[in-house]
Length: 400
Image 1: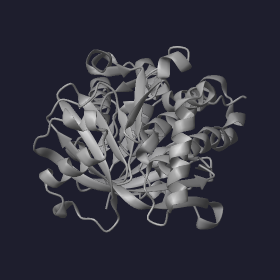
Image 2: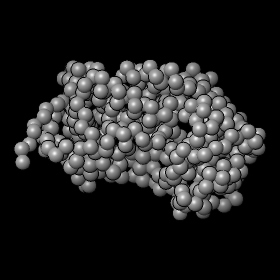
Image 3: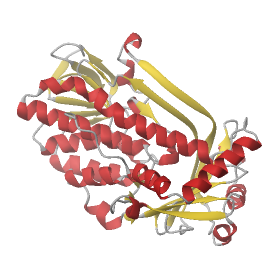
Image 4: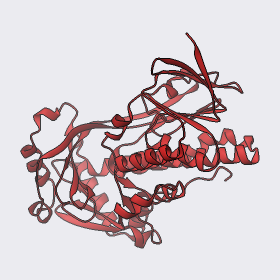
């Protein structure tokens, strides 16, 4: 069979928001890239994911030239609420971080904006690619082979960006003896419900109760996203809309539950919680980005934002490589990313431990959770620590 040979500078595997964002940033700097994705564009757009963007990611999207709709339709939040023991504590993010905030704007919308920008530039994208396989990653001339629409391709490149998630081929292309995996699996998941109902509050509410954790979030002034902690043995089919709304109300402060507007579910799903990090995040000329290298519990809203910080590091690295010849910085990618990743993992682990009900916990553990929250509510130092982590720690420099 005839093999069509293509050439680019950076091969990007995975067309989620991290792969698309990296490609957009590189294209604006004149760095050629080709994107490969095994799913269809419609499937990628149909994923229901996070909607809270850190300040750093917001700034990066603006730098990428894809922020117009986000700035018009997104909602900047300068605070977030913690609810426990029938109390509500507002953390003023802006006041504790010098005016920084987060943006509520759905991952689906971020993906749509990036797809449209890539299409407008005419940058090559191969959706529904099959048999994607990186080769010769430790050489000076790596390549990626794949098939698309019945044709075989060989994509020759300088570098490969693995943005294809935990189960993607990028991470699996690294020999097992070269990787070390750190993991924590939690004994529960989040049951999420999306509805066309007005949010119960203007800002997110993270609620800790004796029945388990709950989160009140939103996508817009008319669309809400709610979550309740459930056991890993639970099935979506066993949760009617009525059961979900009833359980959610029981986990919220009374004044919040009383004004909750319910409605039919547009989407309902259960996501297990775990923390996972692989080290290192590079192998030869392959760089792992986002979920291909790390997973965080959604409690701290760090998953998509950590992927963006990886993109920021790789993007700035490749600019220095191509524009300044700084190949000496290539070995610093992994350690630079991991410094920030482990801090975000710590924050997500801490929030998860503080707000969820653990099946093996006892009354002592419950009192410790309440003491932690009570301390946080009354400590300026504690609130500052929470706020600066929630809005996102500064991006790490390759040359620090």
